[in-house]
Length: 269
Image (cartoon, rainbow, N blue to C red):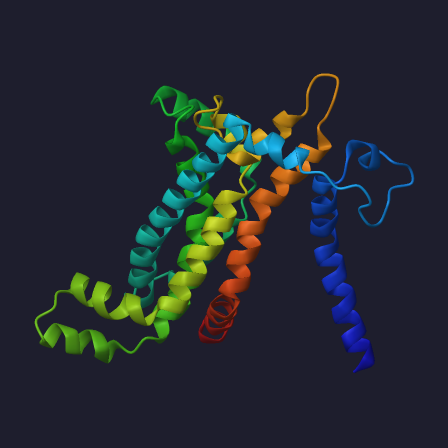
């Protein structure tokens, strides 16, 4: 038991230490930031790094772009993912297991392998440097995980509820929207959180397809705090905290739903 708590404590420290260190970098002066050896606790604090990022119009614009790209990606994945998962869970057809395996395999496909073909296609249809270039690319990799999670939940929902809804005059789509989706809320919510986090943290697609400050998300703008001769590590650390903390708070608030959603899907799948 002692070893267990020791392991848990060590695991928590290792997981939280990088975030605490980045936060410390964001509030110390430049002199202390470059001190050698580095100080463990902040001695001279300053808010100049935070003022730098919030006075930067491109950074604020990038935050808005990240919310738009991640939000639309999540909505698209939930819409198409729930319909696809419901069909896979309810319909009987050959090679269903193969289809599910293929869907899951797509989620682990190397992103860099399709960068060049996607860039060519997006250029031909005029999507380069638009939100949709990043949204479509993020959806390609987030949608399989959404489908995989929701299939497990839809499989375990009793068909009697749908048949009862149809007897009451509901169409198949109405029974799905008004009966099945609310019952699968833990799975839908889990899929939404994971999809949003994945789209929020995307860097490769955003860097490749988005070129101007009007469309670039925050993951691409943060490295821009580095100049030709200097790198503003304090501003980069403050920006990293701003980008990370909302996700941490979101996970902490809804941790029970996320854990119950993941474990329920694992058991029911």
